Structures are given as C-alpha cells and as structure tokens.
Image 1: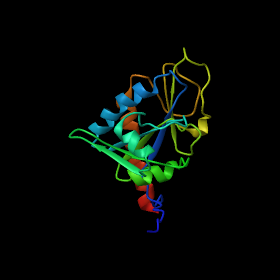
Image 2: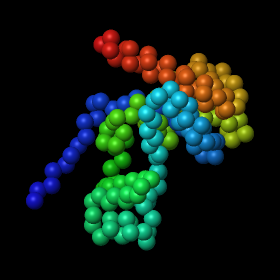
Image 3: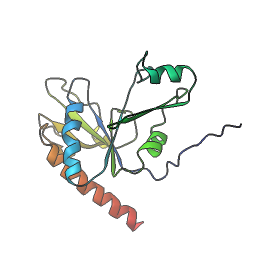
Length: 182
C-alpha cells in the first residue's frame, strides 16, 4: 500500500491572531477571559497553543502514548466529553498547515505564542514583568497592558477582554469587507 501525503489547502484559513507576552505576564489568563467574550459575539473560536519544547503532549505510560510508541501514526482518545487526537510528526511545525487541517471552520483562531510568526499580534504587557515590549509597533494589532504606552496602536487594559473582543469583531468585519471588495 502506498502512502501519499495529504497536504491541507492553506489558502483559505480563518483569520489568525497571535497573543504573545513574556512568560508569567498573564497571556493564558487573558485568553481565558477573551474566548467567552468572542463567543458572546457568536464567533467560533479556535485556539492553537504553541508547545515550544521538543516533547510530545501525550503522557508516557498512558495507553494513547503507548500505542503511538508502538507505531500508530494517529491515535484518538474519545469519551463522552472530549476527543483528543495525537498525530505523530517528524519535526514539522507548519502553523498554516495545522490551522488549515484542524481549525479551518473557525471564525477566528487565537494562537498562544508564536511571537516570531507572521500573524497580527496582540501583546499582553505587565509593567511589573518588563519595561519593554516583545513586538515593534508595526507588528502589533493592539496592546493589552496595565500601563499606557506611547504607541500608535489601540490599547486596552488587562481587564478589558470585552473591549478587545468588540475591537476584534470590528476588525474581522473590516477584513471581511476588504476581502469581498477584491
């Protein structure tokens, strides 16, 4: 039996926004607050968490891990409340292909991390954590911070997930209108 590679079509992926911050700043907490606010706008939200360590997500000793170690290319664990799919890869970390394959039907995809990626970025900044940003202003879609900064981008407080969600909805609408005008 020949094995052919199924490369996903990455030309039609949903809008992607990378939420970045220095470690310990509170980006996961902010994303936890942002998701329900986006859902209130009837958006289907996908999240892709960057796992920067060259280790698997699956846990050694678990049946799913053991089956993958035995050679299964795909292992699915399913229950009444959750399905987990573990796909073995040989080091490829193609963000576009991953989004196209697993998150194509979302209205918006939030990535946690991927600070070096090409997607628009929301940086979460906490003054006590750092005085400098990871991004340059031209990389930023907006800034979420506990202090105002002299930057030409929209800025929101750390507790204003609703404001960020409303801004993102307007951004998505502007983006959609621009695509339809082409």
